[in-house]
Length: 385
Image 1: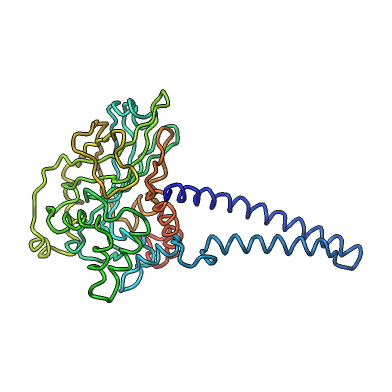
Image 2: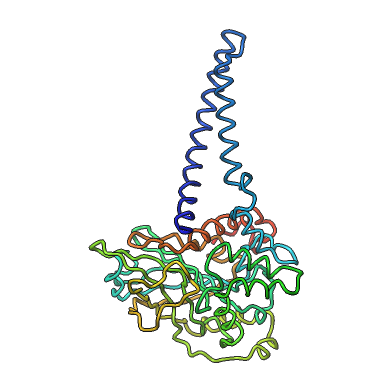
């Protein structure tokens, strides 16, 4: 039901945009017509004035609904974006979450095996250009790397037919919560001055325990290159015959994982991850194997806190190679919104509510940070990746 509501909200917002455009066009026509009538009769036609009042009232009602004014407790993109703000304040010009990151370019080399599951061009054997971003799961663009548990990887793969596949993955094996509403509550609890806020949240959301266990006991590494990145959200692949397959995907590092204690990482510089990956890729391109896991009938697809059993069918569909790293300020990933609902033909969202919620929040974050570009100026005036 929640996934359906998220999808309906997306469709509703699109319809609102179309409706508002039509309303504005109609309003302009009415005003022009009114001016003609008034010029001829020197009296305002009451019918036209009434119609204009109705149009304006309808437009105002639509704006009020989408802003959440009719139901203040309804979770909206604005409220969720605002909840990311750290106590130190918003990092203007940056993403509202995963604010700290570094760009890379490279290629995705498909081996053709993915075509069994999806008709998307990106799975046909070949090489496709990639723009990506290594990042940390924090709203603080200046956070010391050793203080952030979640590391992420965003990618945009482009194909010759003009389509794109965008994905934003993290290194956690499961997500922290099962619904967008619970995620909002987690953000509120994590920023609360109440010392018992997180304890109360965990008690109310027992699914958080699995993520908490990983955060506490999972291995830390000293490199973005040694991390496994997981989609966590479920998607649907559609093959050439029209058959649908519920899937999740992961990027498995070719680099060997070297566990490093949190204490040891704390001794390193605040930006050691960006420095290390820059040097590492300059020395040798870094690779990850992309693996798609196919759900069995009955496997949960709407809850990213639940991992599928380890015996599910997995297919290696290709490899991602990071060939060059560049600072985000002037880099090619700076202006990319890694919206997980940007999918090529042959892929679509599932009943998982998070992709739709993430899409709306990412869009709001994008609008805010691009409007704040002066607060995060490029190194070269007028530079555009």
